[in-house]
Image (tube, rainbow, N blue to C red):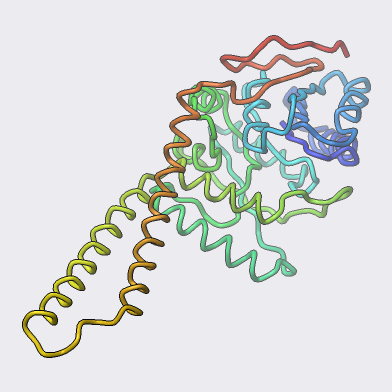
Length: 317
């Protein structure tokens, strides 16, 4: 299952590489492309490939809902006893597919992959990735190693459990670890993008990282509470010092400059805490609204199973 956004040049290439990789594997298979509201001709490329190979299925979302929900739409469309998810930019090597399937055939219900950092990876991205996964593991209690990717195999039992989780903004890397099933991890070296450019910028990466932490941990709220107590204690100590200086000593009370600085600091911390609270309240509001997590506008050779989906048009292939 492959989520796609702006991958019109990679669809046919990936299909051919997957065919070669699975040629000698003793399993029947289907290939599902999910067009996540691409601005180019990705859907036309999916339709063209489906005309050549009836094992190919296509799901088109009505707009760009994001990588995680596109993955979820693909899981809902998959019909196999096991589902492999991978990106459409050719950086997840199709040559690893037989190894994932082999682990599944010997009884593994979850087979994960971990990307090895290439030598030319910028040190900033390497450092931020390691810091994020360490922070996420500490806050959530779910251990994620740097390089963990959305390139994985899930047994039908694991897929059923994931689809039953009704979170509005799922963080699948964390959820796959959370459901358990004793996963095994395979390492891989990322391939080169064949066509197009990556649209996964720093803003999207930060949003994805923050969403993962909020979706898996309430520790930021508890940290806010601790900060509130500490700041209150400092404020009371400063107040006590000011009153003591004013009434029991001959020294002058602390100046307005230091007082203004402390007030600014306290208000800054207060607004940070209110921002964290607002993020959690916004998520609660999203869950209460119970809107569909994604909307499918068109399919070719596929049917998506997700509660609350509106009616959609099915294109014959």
